[in-house]
Image 1: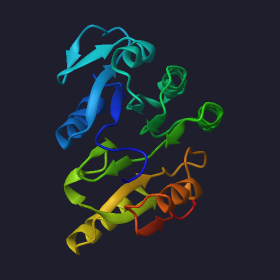
Image 2: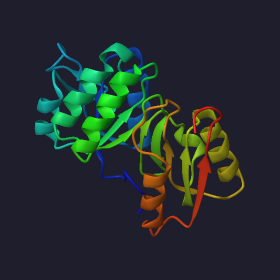
Image 3: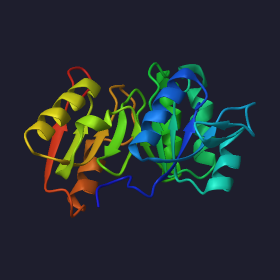
Image 4: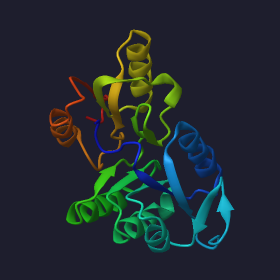
Length: 213
């Protein structure tokens, strides 16, 4: 079963027409993620990477019934993008952007908590359920389906651990990159609870980071 996302999760990419949004949205689509829409203000009505682009999250959610979004937007615009996603009814919000002001992160986190939205990040690699779906920038080619759950504060250590597990025959249920910023969304405790209630997950790896745990 895994946690947080599966092959049926519908995802909206905020900032899909930008350089980073385009690159990583294509990677997500190629992996099998159901990217059902993108949002870039002023570019609504276009199609990009084979998916429709909308001017707002409200329009995108109403048209696709998506439940998740991922933000590839410069830090100075991340606050408004995250608020828009939450107001539109998203259940899972992943903020890849680094350099988000601490006050903005705190306000986004509180808004997410008040609306029962799972927030991953900011400054994170996202999450992946191997052979099903990924949201963010974790390389799918290093993952394999299995029963090891991973929760990490470090992006690069996450990749190294996943690859070592895969090479040695240990697949993963879901891998979650929490992000290294002082203010973040979902944490170790919440992920542990989700993994403990997931019948697929039999082992869990927690990865801290110096100065960030």
